[in-house]
Image: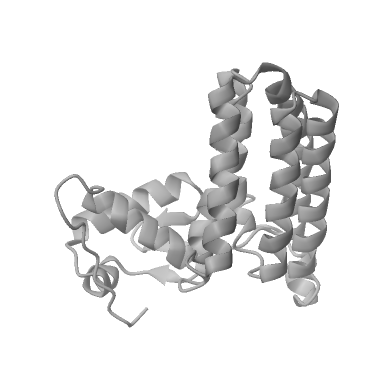
Length: 242
């Protein structure tokens, strides 16, 4: 983390400095500019981004709540390890229980503005991705926004709270940076939007299930080249989640 990258908020009305710094640090973690397990030095990030240490610390605290950063007494911050194969499978097991069902609910319950929001997110993702103007970290955030919007369209806030606690997109997008993953996801998103717009509950359920199945298959390749001790080893010595 040696290259300086200044952060500016521009004219009044733009996002707060802490929000801008938070997004930049999240991208560093997703893009691999900060590697899993790497120690994070607040003073170094402050110099790199051209900001004081206060928004950096605020952002790291937010990222700690998202399980992307850990803070250890007397040591400081570090990037959390990537998901282990077992945690990966457990995460998708939970997603298969929640998301297809919620997609079906969304198809039956959505208001017109909710499905149009979904369509807009999907269209903007495709346009920016194909134009080459969307960073990997930005794509991960937009993908998370899409899935959160699907669940929000159910009208049941409890599902949203459960899904938010998984932090699934931020963890999964750290596994594999491959254009094929994102291209395929765009097409799968379109099928989900179509089924929800047509209020076809069964098709919406199936489309989300197919999307998760394809995503799991693609992301499993992240473990194929890993050393054997990383594929089968324990998560952490203390058993805490990565």
